[in-house]
Image 1 (cartoon, rainbow, N blue to C red):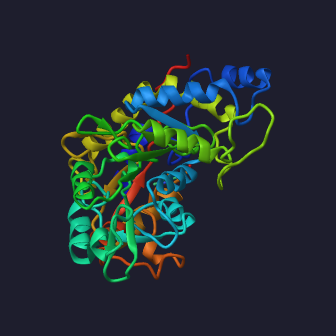
Image 2 (image 1 turned 135 degrees about the vertical axis):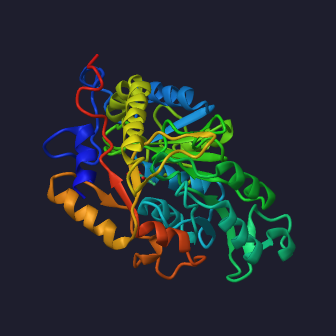
Length: 391
Ligand SMILES: *Cc1c(COP(=O)(O)O)cnc(C)c1O
């Protein structure tokens, strides 16, 4: 135990160590003042477009639309993927609650499949197994040519989308998941909230599916205070996202006509000001986080715990570092000892199927998810003080 604490302290030094804190090493203050002086602090302003094009350029997607937070981004992405009330969406039980909540906000119900032990993300084998057992092509139900997706023969409901999450910035086996989705005509939406700066097969996380989403909450790799983004290569979808997230108001200089039920989910310009400044330092931030992960990997190499590293062929952003310990008792002992020392560590989330809102939902047994839940400890992962020179 003392040696885990020594390991963490050898990177972060003495005193209390947070799990993940933001770094403001760019021109955040100047950008915020510029924004206030412009009077455009709300949902119109040039910094939103600038932030969107920075993220689009960085991730290599054609269109990026900023939203008020990452949860809203998933909700709107699912809706535009065609998810409707009464549908089902396949996702993972080992995730932050926002993934499942966003499904529920659309009026659909999450169905939980297992994850891979190495990536911690949705398992293509588990997805394939579930679909092979449960799915009937929607067109064979007699209602052709119906909407996309397949019918779940156990419930009679339409499975309308698949929503994997790239856990802690480790890319899931998204190429295999995309292939399965294509075979079943299922829209793929990626929850890449934790994965800005992560790549699989040379494509940025969140740009492999039809739609992908990011989060810029305060604990994420860069922050806008609160915020999110939807990524897509489809110009028509991008226009629909913008329309839906700005109350579905028809452009007009003085009339207020809203042509469908929209949302007030647009990111304020004030938040985008932070985003623009943060994006300027993202490559250095990623390099620093990579170095933290490299040191952890080295320090854990001759210890019994397994440090989680990126899957071959992918680049992880190492947003939150994680180790696997022997069992649940060991996990609790590590959490207890480190937190008592002022070193913030935490277990992975409760499985969604253990939360009262999702207890009734279908799942596939979730054997790997449960095994991981008993063994994962997240380690402090901030960019250490002084590693990023102020501009
Ligand atoms: C942070 C996060 C979100 C949502 O982000 P908010 O911006 O806080 O709404 C969604 N999914 C996952 C996996 C996350 O970690």
